[in-house]
Image 1 (tube, helix red, strand yellow):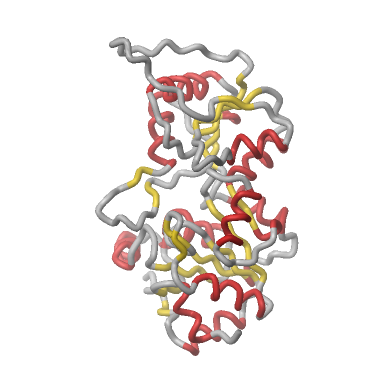
Image 2 (cartoon, rainbow, N blue to C red):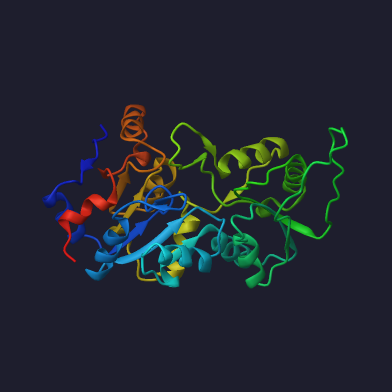
Amino acid sequence: MISFPVNLDDSKECAKLLDEIDFVVVDCDGVLWLNMSLLPGCDRTINVLRKNGKKIIFATNNSSKSRQEMLKKLNDMGFNATIDEVMITSFALCVYLKQMNFSGKVYIFGNVNGGTRGIADELTAAGIECTGVGKDPMANDGDMFPNVTLDCDVKAVVVAYDNYISLPKLVKACTYARTVDPRFFIATNADESFPTPMKHLLIPGTGAFVAFVETASGRKPVTLGKPGTFFFECLKAIAPDINPQKTVMIGDRLNSDIAFGNNNGFRYTIHVQTGVDSLNDVKECIERGEKHLVPSHYINSIADLNKFIDG
């Protein structure tokens, strides 16, 4: 029997949890902000937790920014973060390629978001050549088959979120995925959708693009982000003293954030209602017996902790 998560909107429950943890690993999109809008009060929550001795790690599957760009966004919103508190899948990609002794060029099925070049900037900083970022539109000539030129130096393909999706891009990504060493068909994450304040819209996430390439190529990617164990290895690289049994994961997605905490043995997991998944989704996971997707606690927003923490 899977227990229903504990409501953390309670002073005694909050005090008990905080007394037993040293590290707070927190997702960003849908937890701290939606798109470019800060969720009210979340900046205070994080800053007070840090002031009270908790070690903070911002852990996001978002790859549209580099670590430095994500650090700037965090601090522009008032989180007073340091670079050693930031883990992002664009950086995790570089860690993975270095560990695998990769040599060659990387094709990026990924976006340029508001002038940022997250994956490309991280790869370039790591000394890894890349291609594919930006627009690659279909020729307006009535031909349903794009005139695609492949780069023989491409030895890896990474699929991320791309707001310039096009048939030529998909053809290249699928072809490279089928021909490169299977270790180098890489997905930044498998999130099916993206949190948005426009609740009447469903915004496809990276996982939707990954599924397209996976289906067409007949190959499964190496997925770097949450909920996998590799992403936790990346966290340990920036926080060597992290102890799962003294750590809480806070997130809005059950199959990435909450599963990440559960898969890696975190003492607690907190589900917030401000992003993708709802409390009804938690109930459905319990009914289906999906224990790894069920959080230990829930709360509407992490800002609701403010009334219980001093600072």
